[in-house]
Image 1: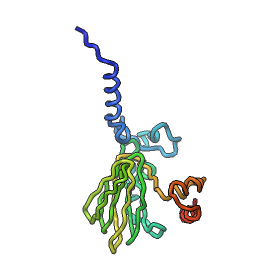
Image 2: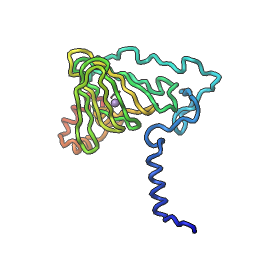
Image 3: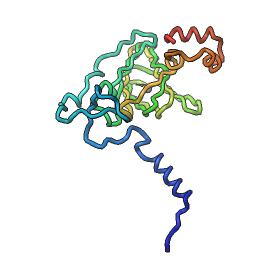
Image 4: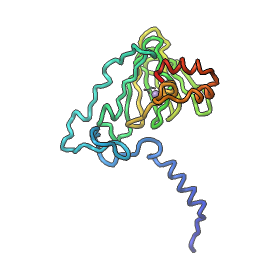
Length: 220
Ligand code: GLV
Ligand code: MN
């Protein structure tokens, strides 16, 4: 006897496999051992073309760019040094990357999101208020010290504030070779060309003078 599968069941199954497939939770899985990015080649549909394996050397698998303390002499008194595919081409197609975050006392890694990755982090030095806000506008936070970890689900707004007396240091890890970062204040008030004042005064329910003042801080 032949079984007839209703079309709606097939559709539900197809949608379910689409959203549960690993390629939709982070970067797609690699199809080869490695693909050291050729950063000079024009960007292809997804990621960078591989450099020929005959040109690959040991150096392609190592990166010392996170050794150095970042310069925190800036508006936010913080610095994010990125260890993504653009800095470390060996990460190309592997779906992972890391950052180093340095914060002077009182320094803030300002509210931002990563559109392409979930983030986890470990505090190596200092005392930090680590916070995130959900899509339902619920704020979660905790004060962390050395050895403690945090996680920020993909796309959620988050920050780290140094609430200690000393410098703070965090290493963060991502499930994308290029997580991207949208810093809320810079994105809205420092874009080029700038977002019209009318949009910002309405969005934040403030006068143009307030918008102009914030724009002046972020070069918008
Ligand atoms: C910290 O939030 C980072 O993006 O490295
Ligand atoms: Mn982050």
